[in-house]
Length: 117
Length: 115
Image (cartoon, rainbow over all chains, first blue to last red):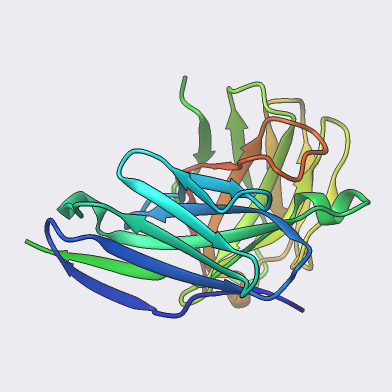
């Protein structure tokens, strides 16, 4: 079936630089997207989300961009810090008409972000 | 407010043994979920419970059963564990029943090894 994927499996950035993590999705029916951060040995932690009626959403040091034309999602982290080192997952949700489709998040495989001090 | 809690944190089973993974949330959320995470793969949904009293299969339900004990608790049972079920299991919850645009919050995970 259709799934969410990531362009780069690993990303190394210098501390203080900006990071950009990319995600491609193939289901045009997806209407909600979430970025999660997962540190080693921990569960995924919500970072930011965006609905399909938006192109951009900003949080604290993070920005998510959604390009529905090319089915592309990105997470930008400003002034990357060592504490940002983790695996980042994008996930999509499809607004189904029945129960199953409404609840299933489809996750990408993740991008590992390493911050170089 | 502990969020989503899971027990145990680690477990080793022999093939054929059974066990139950426990999950509880204190956020008064309606929906709860069980995922498994395998190396190099994203999280895959095993079962979910849209609301108290209901459960439904996800992407990979075979070999598992679930019970929504009450609004707070959602357990995952392996009746006869197999090595293919070695994985990290995550429980999650979300607030609103029936909302496709609703954030899921995850527990810390249970690391299960089946020998």
